[in-house]
Length: 161
Image 1 (cartoon, rainbow, N blue to C red):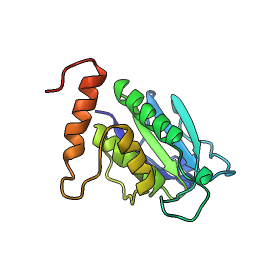
Image 2: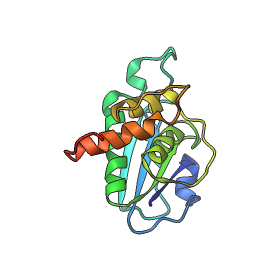
Image 3: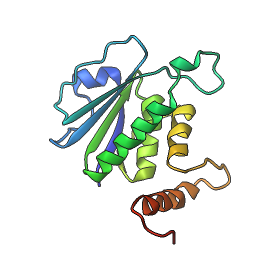
Image 4: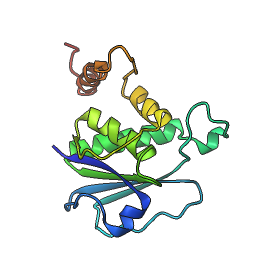
C-alpha cells in the first residue's frame, strides 16, 4: 500500500522526508502569496494550493480559508494517488495542521501512515471527509470506514452491501 507523510515547508527543499520513488506525488500548501519551495527530490507529480491555516470560526475572509473546490481537488488527488499506488508527501508551513489534515484523510482512505506528528486543521479535514460522504461523530470514530467502502462501491457501480 502506498504511504502518505506530512512535512514542513522547509523540509521539502532539504529533502527531509521519506525517500520517494519514481511514482510519487507532492502536494504543496502555502499561505497566499508565499513562494512554493523547490523540492530536493524528484516527484512524478506536484500539485500546489494556497490557503491559510484557518478554522471555520476564525475571523478571516472566506477567500483565505480552504474552499470547497480546493477540498474536492485534494480528495481527487488522493484518490488518483491510491489508484496509481503513488506515495504522497504533503507539506504546509509547519507540516502539522493543513498537511496533517490531508494526511489523516489519506490514511482513512487507505494510505499507510508514516507516523509523523500532526494536529489537523479541522476545517480542511471535515471538508474533505464530507466530500467522501463521511461525517465526524465523536461517539463512533470508525463510521467513516464503512461510509468510504460504500462510497467506493457506489463509484464502481456496485450495489451497497
